[in-house]
Length: 241
Image (cartoon, rainbow, N blue to C red; front, side):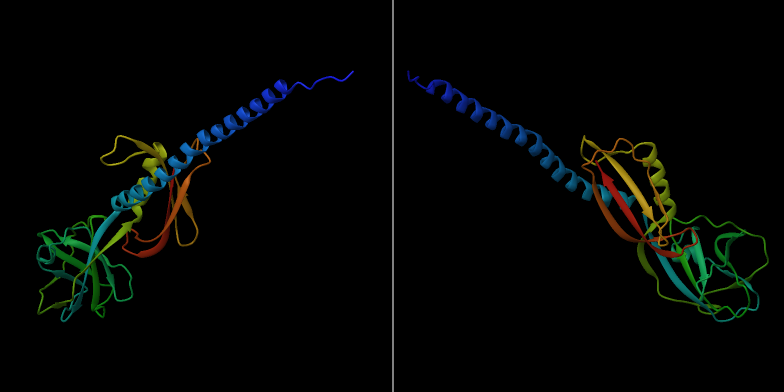
């Protein structure tokens, strides 16, 4: 005896299979679309964060040169040099070979820059002023006073913005304690990781904890100043999650 096939049951199976397929596709969209949107948003945020943090560790550096025309002593006073140049007392001075020389202010006049030459044959110096440098102090050493136009000739002043090593290291220390970064004009915050790579490959960075897999990373080639006013190449790496 022939039996009739149960077409109704077959149709139900097809419908169930189709519904499972639709549910699976919907599930995939739910778990992927928010992630894609979040990643795109993080990329935009990272660009803003980088600019803001790099600005926070950068200072303008003003430099000028002088040529000594006449001076008999190794220690010389450039009278009222700081006030005339509109410099603060955060100064670094280097000789022609790029070697730092001892620099002070005069105890009788804090606007007078005092340079201690290694020998009387040193005639050319480059003077740097930046808020990122340490303050120079006064000394009671006896020095020879010279003035512009007679004792020395002043060169052209140049301004350039540099990142400062000390500020970068402080930034890393701060974000190691708390990775949260709050953007300006925004109520939301993000997690930030930072690494500073010296030219010799040595790397110092934040201690990142509970970092997910979807982390955005961007690397920046930089020039930075150390506390002696030496310029070095390096890298700054930012991570956001």
